[in-house]
Length: 222
Image (cartoon, rainbow, N blue to C red; front, side, top):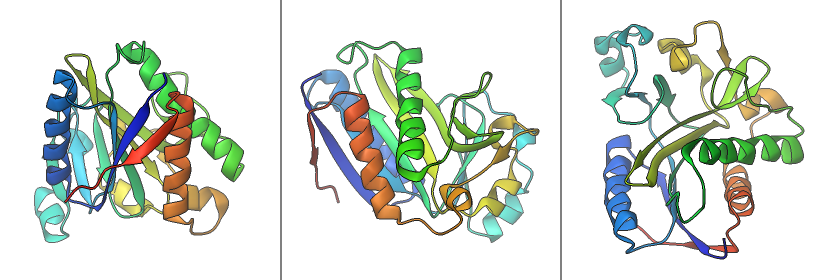
């Protein structure tokens, strides 16, 4: 591709507001009114369920979640149950697959490659794919969750990278329904708190490189 990626950074933003923005941009991308767009955001604590999620994978009661300010939201993405919260970088690529000459599987694999390369090259973390499960892993612990939906050839939802995430919150669920697998963070892997903004910038640069955008343009959004 020889195109500029549009980037919208929402900072700290509640899940439902970001989801509404996703749907708005999805419709515009489907109509061709905008080019490929990436939303970057950090959510307050929220548990989301995918299309194939089992309620039994949510360990905490609704009362506990409510009392502790953790939202519970159903989504149309792939995957099971996952958690978003402080210290986690979430990205929603609103990409036209045909324009990128990619199938769904290829798109997900390229998204995984972004983090495999980034973690290996910039943080000396041995990140890999898993033979059976999507996402990016360090051993049997997932560091980046990936779950997308495709609507009329345009992607939505995306990735969640644990940078300085509170890993204790993952005990409220069985992440992605995988009881035998663990969850990790970049902070845990390198042994100290990571500069969140620097890591976010590195992710953006690696996405541009992997998906062959020649540059990116930051779009202001209220």
